[in-house]
Length: 339
Image (cartoon, rainbow, N blue to C red):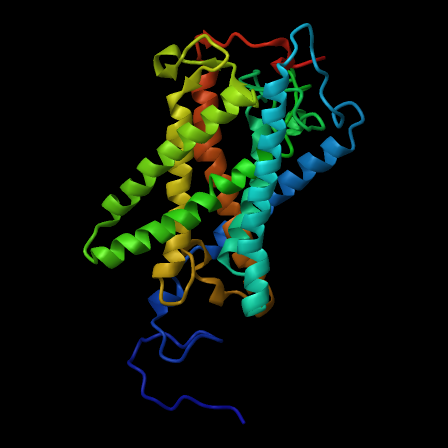
């Protein structure tokens, strides 16, 4: 039997939206931009899939990068590089268990963490942006790799060098522990600070997360750069660089960008915790969509946000500073691109 709403309605008030909660505020029903974020996510996922398919289908590009002589990597650096690859794989497996396996076991469904994890992994396609114009980010050819997909990134320069060793085993996991990994730790820290001081401001709380993320990035990246020779910054502005001109030169904007990513991912995750309905801000408004589209839209919205944030916050500044850099690293031959 159909239920008819016989309650009086003020003149000029809108009719209830089909499928909306009775008595819901129409302004609240219009809130959120999930459709826009989901559309962006659909486009960006399509681009990522296209890039990877074209790369995998290329016999020339989809193969290990050549190791250029005459320099030989010291044996102990190579051992450390393999340890870094193993630790990165373990870290990503742990985060996958936290974000995907545990929710499925406990709740029988996936939540926001699984969406962010997926967005980070798909967002790793943006690594091809690093060298799509010039060789700015130097990779160690001894890393486990199958070349690079930089040639297939839209707007890549025809003159760029693409035969370098995009690190599959330790490089891609970095997109998880510097993003969702920092977000999980950041949310836990902010919750603890709020428990101690309920009046603490968001500026102060996120400022603490940013500071700790800066320290985390400086330590982790410099260990990878110096001990395993995992990568190097080939060209940077000297005024913004530590140890300029050496193999281990380190641009300060790298740490700022990476720490800012951690703060933004923390904010996305915390927005769901702070919301009464448990929704992240990019998921809002999904109720207006057809039921069959609601779940896919929420996934695509989060994934689209992740990819766009990675590109805007990290890769655009990296290109801006790197392309105008005047400090050229003194690199061993095994960190140079081949033909």
